[in-house]
Length: 82
Image (cartoon, rainbow, N blue to C red; front, side):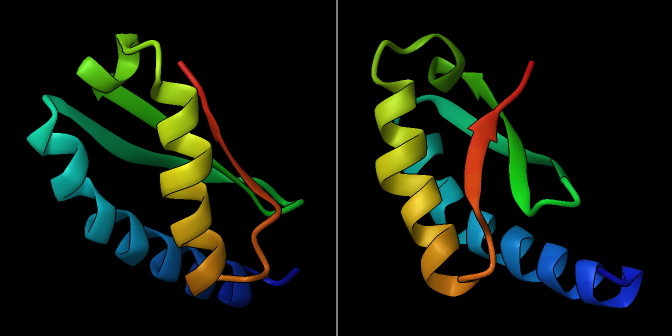
């Protein structure tokens, strides 16, 4: 994938993450976009309560990942990294 296309995807993903951030912040957590790999896996970091919550994987897959894939169908998955 060329760098221009990857940058467009990254902007869309970042915008989508900004839409879900208020929900995470309301629960004492936060999220930041770390990177998007060449195979279109989004890497994020869960911060605060979201980083230690036992439901963080559920939030990541059923909340963040679904929102990102809806807005950017090219994305393969969303994973949390340290």
